[in-house]
Amino acid sequence: MRFFEQILVSYGWEGLALAGALLLMFGVQLYYYIFVYGRISGYRNNNRKVLLEQEPPVSVIVPLFSEDYSFVEERLPLILAQAYPHFEVVIVYVGHDVDFFEDLSQLRQSFPQITTTRIQLDPRYPISRKMALNVGIKSAHCEHLIFTSTDAVPQTDRWLSLMAKGFMRGDIVVGYCGVERLKGFANYLMRTWRLMHSADWIARAVRNRPYRGTLHNLGFTKRLYFGAHGFNYLNMNVGEDDLFMQQIMTRENVSVILSPRATLREKTWGGMRWWLNQLRYYGSAFRYYPGDVKCFVRWESGSRILFFLTVLCALAVMPLEYKLGAVLLVLIRYGVVLWEVRRVVRRLGEEGILGRYFMYDLISPLLTAVLGITLLRRDERVWR
Image (cartoon, rainbow, N blue to C red; front, side, top):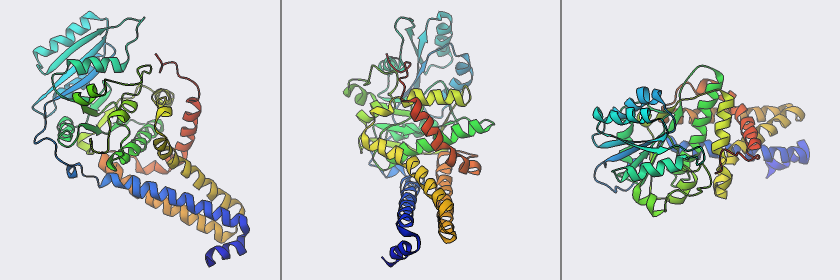
C-alpha cells in the first residue's frame, strides 16, 4: 500500500494509472508466454489414457485440385516412403483431364497402397475441399484417417507412424505444419507467423481445451465424422480444420503430436501479398469461433500493443527513474519471451526464428490489424 502511496505522491494519479496499466499488461504477457506457450515444450501425449493397444492401419487422404505433376513427382513419393507398414494413400482428383487421371491411376501398379478417385470438374458447380474430402473419406478402407494437402512436405519418414500412434490415445490427432524455409524477410514473417499462431491452438489443445487443427496435418476417425453427419457450414469453402473440429473435439478425445519428426512444411507460392490473401481466405471462419476462443487469441497481441504503448508513454512524459523501470520491464519481458519461444521452436523443429524475433514481435500486431480490416469486407471466394 505504501508503494502505491509513494507513486501517487511522486507522480500523481496519472503516474499511478500508467503504472497500473503497465504492470497489468506485463502480467498478461508473462501469463501467455510462461503458463500458456510454456506448456507446449513439456507436453507428453503418452500420459493420456490408452484406447488402442497398437497403431491402427490408416488412410492418408489428399485432395488434388489441379494437374499437379510436381506433387506426383516430388511430394507424393515422400508420403509413399513413410516407414509405416499399414497405410493407404487416397488421392481425390478434382478435374477433367482424363490423361492425367489415367497416369495417376497407373501408379497403383508400382505402389499398391495408392487408391485414386475422381470428381468431374464442372464450372457451373464448383467443388469445395470439403466435398473432395467427403469423397475421400467414403473411398477410404481404414477407420482411422489422416488428412494432408498437396503442398505439405513430410520432413522425415516417421511422420505417419507418429501421427498413427496418436490414435492409440485419442479419436482425433493434430500435428504441426510449418512453412518452408526460403531466403528473405517476407518468408521469415510467414514462418514465424505460422509458428506463433499454431502455438495458440496447440497450447489450448495440450491444456485439454482444443478448438482447431491444421488442414495439412490432422486426423480423425470415420465414426466421429459420420456421427457428426459430415462437415458443417456447407455454405462456406473453409472451416474443415476449425469449425468442424470444434463440433467434434472434446477435452478427452484429442491427441497432440509434437515432434520435429512429425512436422510437415507447406510450400509457398508467392510473397506477402499472396500470404495475406491466404490468411484472409482462411481467416473468414474466425468470426464463427466461440467467444472464449476469440478472446484468448486476441488478448496476446492486444496486451502486447497496450504494453508497448504504456512503455512509450512512460518514456515520453515520466521522470528518469520511471523510465528506467519501464525499460527494465521491457527487458524482462523479452528475456521471458525469447526463452519460451526458444523452447517451442525446439519442440516443433523450427530453425532460424530467434535471431530476428524482436522484429516479428513489433510488426505482427500491425499485420494483425491489417488482416482484421480486410476481414471486414466479405470474401466472395469463401461463400458458395
